[in-house]
Image (cartoon, rainbow, N blue to C red; front, side, top):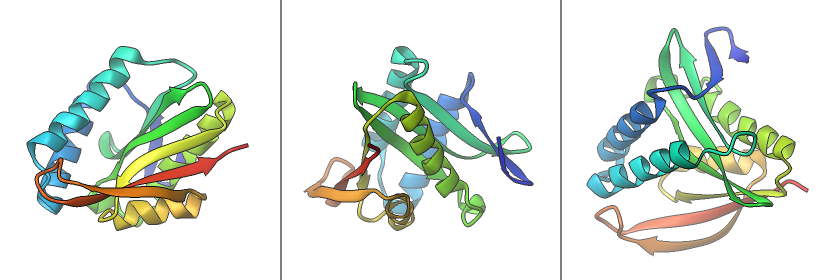
Length: 164
């Protein structure tokens, strides 16, 4: 599926989970100082996705250009009626191209087709661009708390999109 003349969305394939883990760990480390614990969390999420993949209920999409990953997102089953959007990222050089909104919208379309009633997600207040994408898609903030799991205090947020 092509959304732009110079990039496409595709589903995941062998090797993508390692690339996603590496790139997100590097980006979060450089941008926010989130280190080893964040990398471990991303690795656990991507490994669990592969290990427990539910075809027709879960998916990972990659935005790419000429074979280079420009961004990615996961949609996984939380329960029979609830999907969870996870690990959205867009590479710095690809920001402003509509990739983030295309990835988020792809999750919404897939969740509806899979029969979910809602999508939830967990993010952080410092991730301003991602928060704008979620709000534009219709997600609402449902709660927040402060934690120091990534080495310093951060405000984490819970968001919800009702599909029904």
